[in-house]
Length: 185
Image (tube, rainbow, N blue to C red; front, side, top):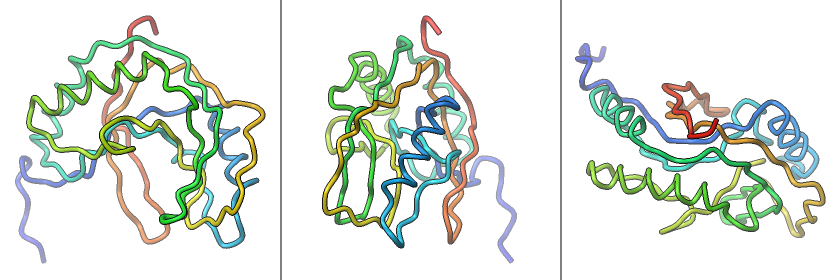
């Protein structure tokens, strides 16, 4: 039996993300099912998201600090347009992303990155040093050729969220810890 954990030391696995609205979520889920290869695992509709920064395990005290940091982020609302498909064969990940990263998304990412770095948080930046905005559509996929994404998937991004993930053998589940509105939303 594990010893009881104090409130400040309980571990939370967290990240910052954008969640599509219901219409975009439906389109992305349908796209993932249509393009998934046999044996692959399309993402469940309510797990579809665009990760801004994956933090990893933090204590409850650090979780509160992350919320405080995010409350200080000032960025504008914007329309996100996913207009290309991509595939990472080494991980079997099929995704939808942006041909051109919208300037407001880049500014949100940079403001969040700067604030996390200033507070000494280490985090995973998807796409290496910068931002490669994408929504994972399927895992364990095989994709010798990608079709064109003829109809882009768009949604109005009015907020970003701090999310806690719980890993399960079949898939992860997510709980939104806090939402942070963007200017003009």
